[in-house]
Picture 1 (cartoon, rainbow, N blue to C red):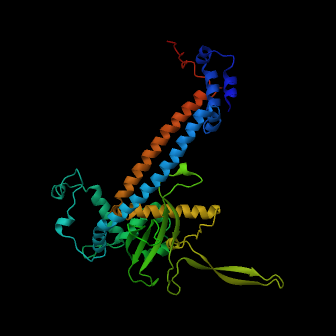
Picture 2: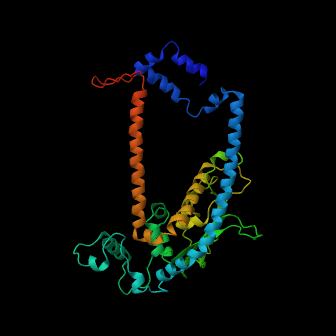
Picture 3: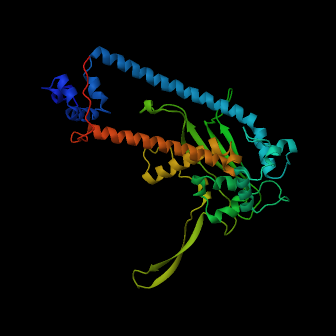
Length: 383
């Protein structure tokens, strides 16, 4: 909307008349709301000297984005450094889960922050929420005091996450019971490195020997980019995953759960006879995660289906990296799920409040809106 159009809206009305007529003000405001996202028209009305300075500020903003990209690259190197510091803790977790190490009495003591000690808790007859949750987990796993390690640790943790549980099919579960660890490895150049290593991370899924495939480790590699897009530098908000690569699964005969046989009727065009043919098609499975769509840098545009698959794949990769692997025990017990649910609930409440405000604004901005008899608008008092 041009400045001339804005003047036309208010032409013939004094400021006092506009302030005293809420319906007219609402009509003007509704028109002005249409200016959102049309800043260019406004900028063009500014003097040339001001526009030159704005252009200079935009160039500075591009420089900001470039420096921010370097910041995230260095932050990634810091993650790589601390990954080595975390490694002994992850190794100890793996050993406890897989019955390679039995924690001491001291290591096994746990007191919920802000709550009473285990000795005091035994005095209470009523079971705590944690005890009830523990009993539920034990019941589902069918374990007792003779059980070694923590059976189905990773399978249970993943099934407690909605986005992952939707991927896991019934025929996947017997295989995922052999999953003994998930490791996170960071990739990227360190000081003095002359290799072609690029910024990213690798997920390693470690399996015990099983009847399904011969691999001991399945990998998923994610490549990241931490530099502004030359065509849209202002959209930069940090490193993005730009591609992912799976691995070949060496399935044993008749054990590939990512494929299934389907029978179809096929009619001969000439003779009109019908026969039954068997075709191999893709089957829903968690293990399709290791066979993402291949994307080359030369491809400028992807079809919608591929884009959707990659978006989901990148989201899952981030989830493994940032949440599930660092906090696996909390997803196993369900405690992390409660925290996630609380966050979502708070967001929804905030959205409701915003929607209510929007509804109120819509009524006020509606030129046909008439307040109830008892709701007379207050006139703006001139000072």
